Image (cartoon, rainbow, N blue to C red; front, side, top):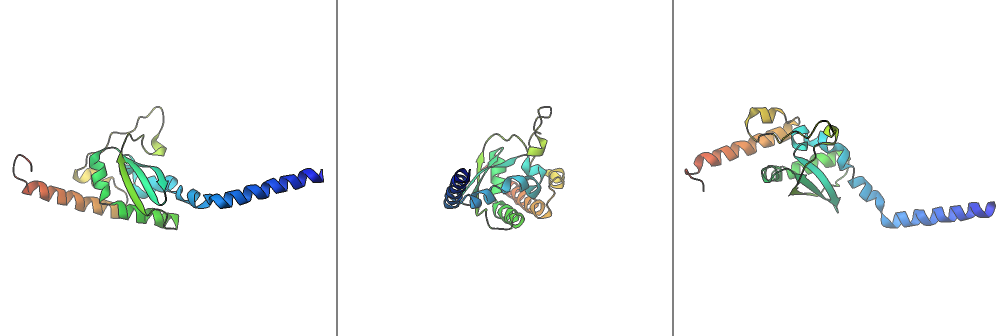
Length: 158
């Protein structure tokens, strides 16, 4: 029986060394983004943007449309900063957005309730739905700048 115990310890030691060599702890820490994403960005953004994968500090986020990709591009540094604050380490160094099908935030996914359609990107109703005041203020500035540019454009587009 003692011989079997020593073999088990030996296998355990080999497994421990192998796991240390793979350095999985850093990868596991990076995946801490998923449980905090919805709370960090708020429900309105979470309906239109969800993390897909993370590699070497770059978080790949799937967005529902090119419009959302453009809007969130302006906010990616602030989102990364907020995620890193919640994670307690600088794990998200960059965010890369890609357009794709969004299933909706995890807490909303149920067979009976399909994901809500994307919110319109204008008006006070949209801004009121963004819970985080810093993100809300950033969107307000982006939308105001967009409105100013549209007023300056000649009729018929660019």
